[in-house]
Amino acid sequence: MAEQHIPIHTTYPYINLTDILDKTEAGSADMPQLIHVGGVSAAGKTTLSSYLAERLPDARVLSIDSYLIAGLGKMTVHFDDTPPDPNRPYIGGISPRVWELDLLTKHLGALRKNEPVEVPIFDQTTKDRVGCEEFIPGRYIILEGGHAFGDELRDTADYRILVTTPLHDRITRKIVRTFVHYRRTDLDDIVGRYLTKDEPVWQHYRNEHSALADQVITNPSRPAEHYEQVPEVDKPVPLIRRFNLIPMPDTGVLHDGETFYVGHSEDGIHYVGYAINDRTLVHLPLNADIVRRLATHYRFNEVAP
Image (cartoon, rainbow, N blue to C red; front, side):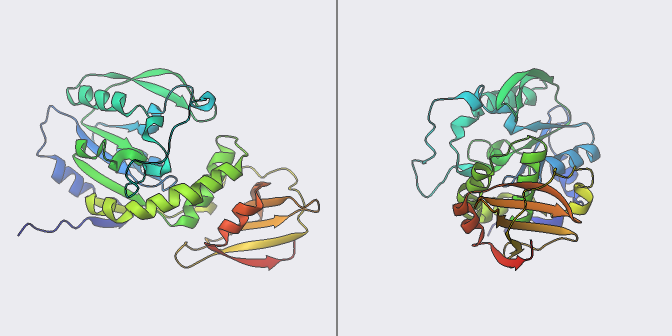
């Protein structure tokens, strides 16, 4: 009987580097070893990949999102997000045609031969490519992104790391990151898509991808530390009714100094906000239907506005 595969479970920032080195040591010394880092959006794949690259010898990070198609923000072509097999939803609930996975696969083949490639530069603010840059392979290539465990790419890996994080940490990261770093304010699309697509698909694949992984690393938030330099928003719109959101047991926990809230203003507009130690970092309109969706994952605790 074949020995059952049991992945190593750890919590960031601890990573079992010994296991990575031991399992990739057998690979050709002349051929780069591919480490795939996968997981749901906002789990912390990029952070963990950068951390890993600093600790492995001659390692480079290659992001799958660099291969998002050119002109994505201007595209009028409709990509069908409904998969041919209803039992195999698309990763992230999005058609894989949004990425040039064929080009990525071609590049991975070249990198295996120690050949440099021209990787697209994708601007997440404009949703478009803004050029290319040369990527020179090292001993380790860390391929990070939602499709790292997908059908198209999983078999190219020499080692697989799955990043997991409670839903509360992921949704608040998504909100802060999108507003602060990408300057986007369309939280209806961001939060709505996350709750209706990213989360259900992640729950569908979670056990399957965990079984494929060599390591499963939980990456909880440390918001008081991570958001210390994030500026406050200017004069948030006053709310006449406000509810602090308390995560359900399977959603996560509130961290020290953290406040996540919803409410509505005098003119009836709903808002969502996020604060650390009374510093409000996000305060933006949110559709009432999406506020109601949050009630599936949070308990609403009314407080004085």
